Length: 447
Image 1 (tube, rainbow, N blue to C red):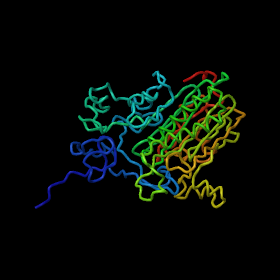
Image 2 (image 1 turned 180 degrees about the horizontal axis):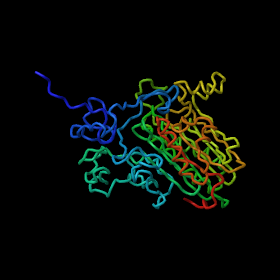
Image 3 (image 1 turned 90 degrees about the horizontal axis):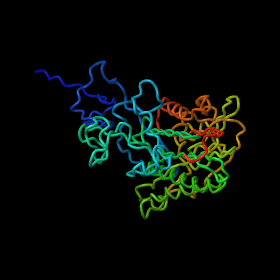
Image 4 (image 1 turned 90 degrees about the vertical axis):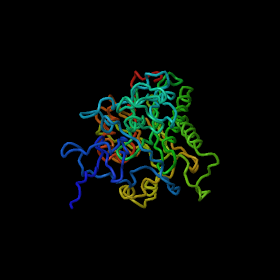
């Protein structure tokens, strides 16, 4: 007696191309019911031999030195069911997934398209509205499914009609205004985007213009890293927007902005939380993140940071020297500074991305780093998380991937750098802000 033929085992989701495990009944990316989907025919569907990406390695996300904890929550998230991974615009992109609606179309302050704590409507912070393609509001849910356009979205983020998981608005965000542009993306390996940014342009007390960019990377080994990065950029941006018009020197305003960001992140810790080194039995770390900011005021460039998010200077004239403007608070940087390892050796070590400075209730003493520069020629400032600089670590490498027309097309530059990181593997969330220097003359006023 011969055995009845068995249907072939699905190795990738026929609906969205996500790799599957043998026991999966539903796709973890799009939520499709696998029992109701026929397997793709030979040559007509995804490549069956595709392997699930391996996780691990220092580029997966930041973790804190001497303060280990359980990995952050990895809530399932989905890319839009109608298109590929959001990235730089180009052939094959699904319409409607290149950008989020322009925050400037609302009455709320612009420049915080990424950085909204979970459960808080983005519109209240000047952020993007619902994800592209989400359709009109549906009674009782707030929006309809972006895939079937018919079902209501339940509290867990899945369509009650077709079962598709809905994309989070922070999966891919963009913003452009006079003097600054920014892009943030979930990357190819992570289930959610734990980065955030805030960008703004405002008037100074002396009538000049100040352009602001703040970028933050949530620490993956902490709880709620996405909320930490959101709180940090919002607090820092608000402080800078208040201080600079009053005539506060940019370096002083930057120092204060980082301290206010640290307070905002520390406030996210559960009541009664104490640093882990004082309680060896506590099972979670407080929310934590890194921060880096850049402020352009006239001919002055001011940067501030804690952690390993970075700022680079890339001149228009590539025959002149680019520069990295920040020094990492990390294990690798300490090894190089102490002369114990070369830079290549340190960053090849699995401990390279263990950070020694961060924002959060578990942080050591907060000591913001600030520095000011007077660039003598036109160029751009690149402010980014390690999701980008992992693929262009040195100033020379970063300059090599920045397009020649970056100063006149900052948003296209940010998209190009995102594409570079995704082409390199996209192991981490990727966030980058581009500030042309000097600031375009039309940048006066508040964005």
